[in-house]
Length: 290
View 1 (cartoon, helix red, strand yellow):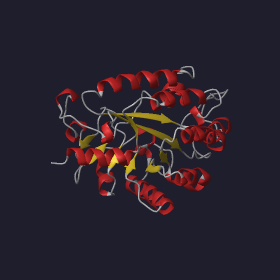
View 2 (cartoon, one colour):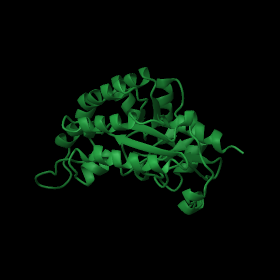
View 3 (cartoon, helix red, strand yellow):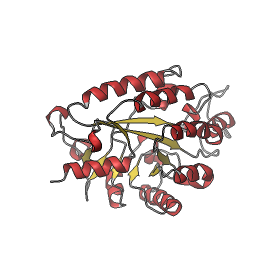
View 4 (cartoon, one colour):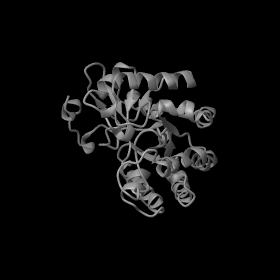
């Protein structure tokens, strides 16, 4: 299906009012992306260009740059979320659960939601068997947490033409790849529908730090500006705000304070709820049931 066949155009100003629980007007969810980068493959992203160009193998500088996030950066970010009592969502490669089991255990102990993020960090268009990759990821999460994942985030937001169909058929309730709205929306599939929960490309540390090359404080400034506008918009009807972080980016020493300051600003405002993806999904389905 074409994207326009999966979802009809709908102006947000013309929709019925949505009301969050406990008189909240804005739901904020924080997604922590944990990945395993295969040192035998080209690195998904790079911070250092090889001196002679090309794609070196092994690419030790860029592999190590990412590995730092899982060895150190995640553990630097964790106290921030603990102090503010924020229930984060762990978007994790299926293979990363075994490779970085202490991270998975920390998330499980805190009752974070686990969502699928591909079995390895590879574009879904390049996966040999997409359904097998999705089911393998689901199994890894189910075997570790005791329950199957309900949400999916494609590596790099990548999908094939069939991804929403396969996800719905494999039992997923929601996806995050369709970054086109400030409220959940329903996507048509060849079977049962699947809901897209608002994610973000703008308040995403990959975009800000690695692609647009902003200084570290941009994360705080942009997150606060995004929050203030969505908070104002939500006077008319509930809105969803996502904040996306990767341990190797916002877990770096010079960036952590800006992640913390953004969350502190948001947490001190009334009528804001921090939620997981599945909590947002359950609320949306119940609110729109006819």
